[in-house]
Length: 212
Length: 75
Image (cartoon, rainbow over all chains, first blue to last red; front, side, top):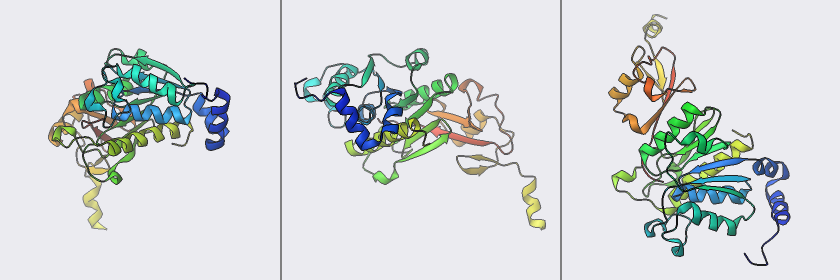
């Protein structure tokens, strides 16, 4: 950190100017868990930290790989670092007053409840389809009071306009095109993954503000 | 209005926004017929999750509103 870093008060005042003080107050009081810190999760976390979400719980079992750099919010100099640690370092530079809790471990059906207990909203941001379904079923079955924002379908080069936010039930939302699967060999391209991450982050913010 | 009589006794429910004649089937039976891979989905019935362990014993009823969320890879 250099001497030019704005103070907490300055950053809050700037946020209030842009987003309104009522919204900032609600966002500051919120805790959001981001499960998976890849193309979706790293972008979601940065969006939420910039918007003034008070606390983020960042969870991933993986390390930054050179093949992640085309779409995930890490730097080439961070290859090999645990993703939670690397993202924490980047967030400290972007939004230094966000409270961050990191977990370098795999989310399972067994540890999900204690890991996510303090979150108001849970973001599912894994890349593996079975892991996505596992987390969604675990949260909905065991923590019905949580808001859950998941993602399915953001691979390939199809139009970004196919990516939508679907309200499945009162507390469960799914973003994506619902179809495009990396298993079909269509790859992942940064802006399309970021579009889906932006849908998720916006949905989280709308839920915190009571707009959904 | 004799035509409407045809519809009165048809057991319909809504799955992902579509009317489906699946009343009386279990969730497991419907998912198998529709070709879903059960390790990649979540099923909501009338705003509540159907636990995976209960797919085989949960019987779909007339008027149910069901959402099957299918997850694909990528993130």
